[in-house]
Image (cartoon, rainbow, N blue to C red; front, side):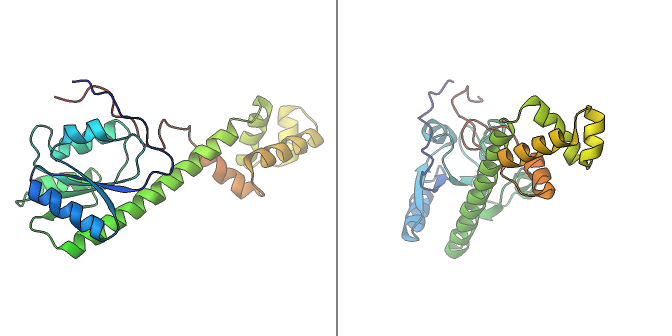
Length: 228
């Protein structure tokens, strides 16, 4: 089954709790509960309806029923991870299933809650998830910004950078690269300026913490074929 994905979410999209449960009463209850606490919520009866609607990069978290018709909650969790969607997940289940609960948590779920659930607890968990999602997105954006700055370095500056983060002093770098110390100093100054750092420690952190930009703020698209 191919799904045409909605447009990517805007950068300032409001964090949303995506409730996915085949029980209409649970969907209505959770949606009401979230909105009563000032949290935006959208509800879906199954995984496929969520995937058709989800906008890549949209911030938020999932409150996900473990036993869904068609694609199960665990299948959806796995599919999202495979497509690069990084959102915190809270699993719900109407019956105890320790092995699946363990599997869900090992796969990255924040918690596993049995129905009926405590209203206050689930609101607190959702708030924790939204904070984790915001923090994670900020970290990824910082890493992408570092990668963009690294991409502005020339090949020669990259060679000098590698020597600097290896802990070599200017004299040794000059000898090994067969250039003058003043040239090394000039390269280092440009590297520091381009990477917007003030010390070697910050330089190392900026280099090791960088990664190439991804498609949608850390979340992949959902426009490819869905698992059967």
